[in-house]
Each structure stands twice: as structure tokens, then as C-alpha cells.
Amino acid sequence: MAQKDTARCILDAAEELFAERGFAETSLRNITAKAGVNLAAVNYHFGSKKSLIQAVFARFLNPFVVELDKALNEYEASRQNSEPDLMSLLHLLSMTSLRSGADKPGRLNIFMRLLGLAYSQGQGHLRRFLRLEYGHVFRRYSELLSRATPELSDEDRFWRVHFMLGATMFTLSGVDSLTAMAQHDLGKSTSTSEVIDLLLPFLARGMQAPAQSQDS
Amino acid sequence: MAQKDTARCILDAAEELFAERGFAETSLRNITAKAGVNLAAVNYHFGSKKSLIQAVFARFLNPFVVELDKALNEYEASRQNSEPDLMSLLHLLSMTSLRSGADKPGRLNIFMRLLGLAYSQGQGHLRRFLRLEYGHVFRRYSELLSRATPELSDEDRFWRVHFMLGATMFTLSGVDSLTAMAQHDLGKSTSTSEVIDLLLPFLARGMQAPAQSQDS
DNA sequence: AAGTGTTTCAAACATACGTTTAAAACACTT
DNA sequence: AAGTGTTTTAAACGTATGTTTGAAACACTT
Image (tube, rainbow over all chains, first blue to last red; front, side):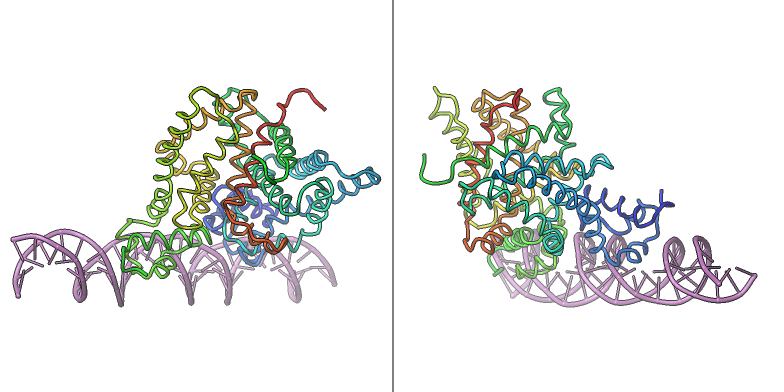
């Protein structure tokens, strides 16, 4: 399994194991055993475990931000005279995400789970890394999102963006377990892109809920 | 800080540290130091670190399910002739959650994080433990939720319930990081119950989005 | 006050971890 | 084929972890 490229084998194994068990619960020995490489290879190729974690993210995220940037360029060009629309922005993001993980099935799921772990587990270095490395594109998207929801206060928008993020991360990171449950409970299987089709209207409607003023 | 009851001191310290850093990243030495008790006390009183984690979990969940069951009794009694209403059901759940963790801030936070781990760990026995021990109350709530959203297909409802679950778990489990970000970005601090007040309309609106039929 | 069961304590235990090392194996130019 | 820079390897290092131990301290009945 290893012959091709040691660093790549390590990334593949690490990606899978991190998603299964979390960061702290996955040892370098687990990773190198699964990858079929020597224990020292991780430190040789990546320097440290921390850097390996960041590299796993970077491998997914680098192509993703390029794609997203391109998609945003097209989007802004095609809408130069009209304000951005929420549903189309969400659709743009989902399309870009699906396309970015397309080389390996389940990579989007894995990445979402990793992102969730990065938020929920300690890993302060990861959040700093993400913010520093990819902050620009996210801020650009965020700007469009603001213009697509001018009726929201900054506070409302901030929180609702994270509500969306939570719903999306949870759903996509656990899409395998969830589709299995859906299959069992409803007798109907659902693909990832179908799940996203169900998700987007939910998000858009939640986002567009009336602002929290005084109301029963 | 310890004199009163060693086991309780350990639970308090563990709860706080787990919430701050996660489980694997918190050592028994961290916990016992903070609790002001001897290192061996954890193993003496709880048997193992795993059992301590479950004990932290049970301390929140046992009163919670009792409270939820009571709240559902009252709810059903007061609405014997009318069908349940979505927003009031969500409100009931949030009130019960907040009340259950009211004696110490951050308790709801760690419970949500535990729940997230139970979901993200595909084969964790924690998840089976939950389903077996507390499944009845959750199934009862789920039944009411179905009656509150009769316009949804079983499939739509299944997925949207999990969208809600994801948004809620992510938000509340990371409420400390998120409020810190909000404080930094907006200069405004937000309490947990205020976050929930922002969350519920988002969830309710998403839940009530038009069903996904044939539409642009 | 002696006796008894419980709780605390300092110390040690075994294990697992991330990382380093120095030699060996390899790849590739000259 | 020798030389050179890169990669792989087995072994060891230092540290931190969860857990166990046996004696001391305590609480409480008799």
C-alpha cells in the first residue's frame, strides 16, 4: 500500500483514522502501521504530529479555496448589478464542496468530521492555522453573505451562520450513520447530494427567519 | 476546595476541564490537582477515567430526563385537546435543558459535547448506553414532534430533526469559543440562554420550510 | 480507648506516546 | 563504479499517562 509515495500514504491513513477516532486518540503508530510505513516517517516528512494534522487539512482545503475563489469570481461577474441571493450562495458553496472531494468518495464527509473535531476538541493551533491560511476566502464569502441578508443585524447573522455551520457539519460528517438510520427507519436510502438538497432549504429558511425583536 | 466531598469535587473539576479541553486532552493529574485531591482518588471513587466520564455525563442526564418527563407530562396534560406546537416544544426542551444545568454554568455545554462524541464515534458503547438508558424519553419527545409537524414527510422530518440536532449541538458545545469570537468581532457578549433564544426561531423556521417537492 | 471499616496519601508501576538518532538502503549524477 | 544527497529503518530516549499499592489517617461504633 505504501510503495507509491510515503507522504501520501501517511496522509490517507491519517485522514481516515483522525475521522474515525479523533486526533488525540490516534497515535502516530496507528497511522504509520495503517500506512505501511516506518514510524519515523511522519516526523521526517511532516516534522511533527501537529504539522501532520494541518497537512491533512491543507490537502483538502487548498484545492477547495482555489475552486471557491474561482466560483466567487464567476458569481460576482455574472451578478455585477444585482445584490447576491442567499439560496444561490448556499448552492454555490455546496457545489464547490462536492466538487472538491470528488476524487475520493467520502472525503467531504471525512473533512467535515475533521472540521467538527477541530472545533470541539482542543486543537487551538488548528483554528489559528485555518484562520490565518484560509481566512481571506471565507471573509470574501462572508461579505457576500452579509449583502444577501441585509435585514439581519451583525449579531443575528453571526450566530445564524454558525447554526448553519453546525447543521451542515453534523449532517455531512455523520452522513453514513444517518443514511443507515434513514434506511432502517424509512426504508429509503439517500445520497450525499440529496441530503444537501434537503439541507439547503432548511438553512435558507432558518437564515431568513424574522429578526429577534419583540414577538410572541 | 475539597473538604466537603471528594467525589463531588472531582466531578466538578472534571466537568470544567473536559468542557475546556476535551476528554483525551485532560489528564487525571489535571483533574485531581484542580480538585485539590489525591491522584488516586479518581480510581478509588470511580474506578477508571472512562467511568468518571460516564459519571459526569450521568450527573447531568439523570436529572435531565426526569425533568423532561415531568415537563412532557405537564405539556400533554395542558394540551389534551390540541395538537402540539413546534415552537412550544422547542421551548420546552430548551427550558428543561437550561434548568438541568442551572446549578453550574457550562454543564449544558459539556453534555452537548458528550452527545457529539457519542454520535461521531460510530461504534462507541456510549451511544448504545444512551439509547438503552434514556431512549424512552427521547422517543416520547419525538412522537410529539411528529404530531407538531404533520405536513412533513417522514423523510423530511427525519433529516430536519438531525439538522436541528447538529445546529444545536455544535452551537452549545462550542458556545464558549463562539461567544469569545462574537465578543471579538461584535464587541458584544452573549449568554447561553440568549444564544438559545436566537437559535430557536432559526430551527423552527427551518423545520417549517416548504417540503422539497418540485420547485425551482 | 480499642477496634473496624473507610478514605487519603506518597510512591511506584507498567505502558504508550511523540520524537530523535545513527546507520543502512536507496536514487541518481558524474 | 564511485560519490552524493535523500529516504527508510530499527532502536532508543524522555516524558506523560492511567492505574495499583500498602501504609497512614480518619470516622465511628462498642
